[in-house]
Length: 300
Ligand code: EPU
Image (cartoon, rainbow, N blue to C red; front, side, top):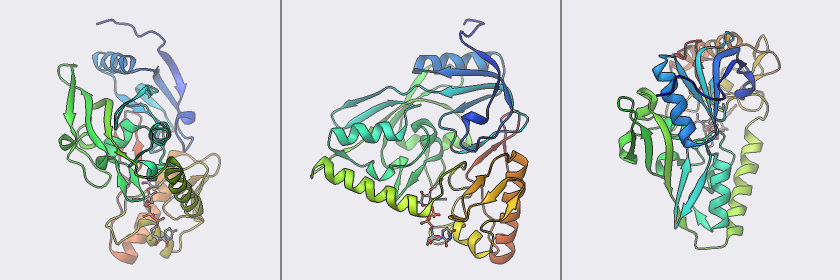
């Protein structure tokens, strides 16, 4: 094992790597542009006994205002390859890339995920989804790095024990190196798939704000109880703490209006959860990962 990692950067500000645009400096920062670089950087960090955080699209994380006392790996390993109806993708690939490849080859199954931010690796971890499709519906298998031996292992979808926005590797972290997703030959033309995508995007743009946010802040407590509706009904649209605001468009989207800090967002989220609890008796659970400077996920 080498003691050095080529192209390792130091004291890199994390704000640009999160859609909230919040976060101080990471002690160490490495861009992995392929699976081997991702693996080597991860093993290097483990051997140095550093806290490690893998960031993809940064669309589900709030870094600490103090930054990160360890190694942040930006996962830019995004090679994708189609074999019949199966897409093999490195874990830093984006949904938009996969959807484009699927449509070019008239394959269906992922077109309704258009607009879903983040990488496929992060999507496996959090069983990301929208419009009635979840990552678990598509995943055939994934190649992970064994945490003990540092060998690659291919595991089937069942391994992840998926549920709504949850998986085994969210509770017990393991590095996803690549995935295999199963699609279906589409009976119509690629134009039908494009039309579905357009419809989905129009719907999303009508309901969800753009700007500096991280999608839904809280999980929906059940299929019939929407966190967004509950925060809205508590009268909190537009409520602000510092530069953090509950979106006027969708109450489960929290916005950074400019210079919001992690603390502003935590205060905002606590207030929203408290008001919903008082009104409905239901305790909201966060979907967004709020990291302390050592990489622990903090509960609000
Ligand atoms: N609603 C309100 N007020 C609001 C927001 C929503 O009354 O401010 C109502 C809507 O009118 C609707 C219901 O609440 O009747 C549900 O809202 P919406 O259709 O916007 O869906 P959602 O449950 O808020 C979920 C996912 C989104 C995903 C959409 C579309 C969660 C937590 N969120 O949102 O996922 O894009 O469905 O499939 O499961 C994400 O996870 O980051 C995300 C954006």
